[in-house]
Amino acid sequence: MSEELTRFLEDNQEKIFKKWKSVFLSSLGEEAKKFFSREVDPFQNPFGHRIEETFQGLVRIVLGEFKWEEANYYLKRLVQLLAVQEQVPSKALNLFIQLKGIIREEIGEEFLKRFGIEEFLRLEDKINALLIKGFDYFYEYRERLNQIRYDEWKRNHFLLLKRAGLVYDPMEGMPQVEAEDKINQ
Image 1: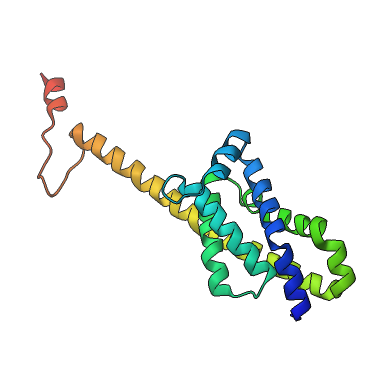
Image 2: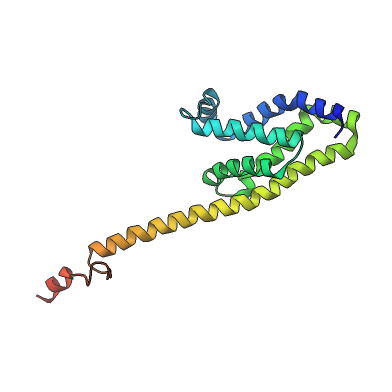
């Protein structure tokens, strides 16, 4: 990447970050947007802080030097939030398609004139790579969430059956079946 291109992208980084974050927060609703954008202190508003941190990091990576180690850190943190919020990966990860649109709208024309289509396609390839990897992480986190829900469901039902005396627990010995005694009387 040329020095001129690097400077151009750095100059536009803040504008793209703010617009992308605003589009994302708008998708959460007006009240959520006000709350999450008002305070980014990690203790008073951990969700807002994580949004701020991940969006800044991802914009810096897309518009700067792309390193997978750093990209994975921010991508995982963002996709964790999305996996909890959204049911469908295509809806959750649409924000990367929105980022492409924001870049085209904000700097696309000038970018193409100054640096050509090849550099622009390289920039979009970085976003595509994040999008594809994001699907992997989304699937991984949704699986983890579903496993947690299933384990909780099993635990609750086991305790219910145990209280009813319908489950043998080797740690406690054979259950005492009071309900059966009442039926036989």
